[in-house]
Length: 152
Image (cartoon, rainbow, N blue to C red):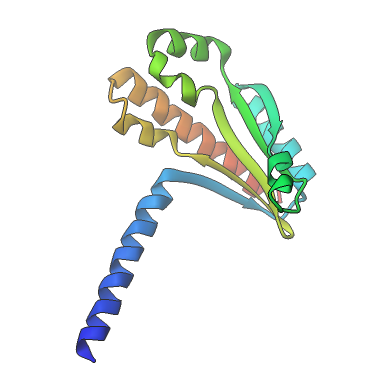
């Protein structure tokens, strides 16, 4: 009996640590506004933070083909064109991560906005110049998500 309790306790500790580690990898905001309202607010706050929208891509087409029933799932691409161009030229290995991408989707009566935490990119690209850029992106994204939460 003690062995089972110890095994369960160890499994819980490992799972909690994994969850905490994964939480650091994502930035997320949950909104009670409708998908459309949250999408408009997201685009406004992106512009308000000095970024330019690149495009909004529908993702739900592939999802509906695999059996999911949703028409409210998008990826919003944005950045500062000069910064994206400079980073692409100087650090071509960053191109897959440019521009910044944010997923937005409806989940029941709520809308979620999620992105990878750009600060984590510093682990793979430790150049001091990049660390500053990734840190600024993280702060800007946190501010944008705070704006979404405050708009309710």
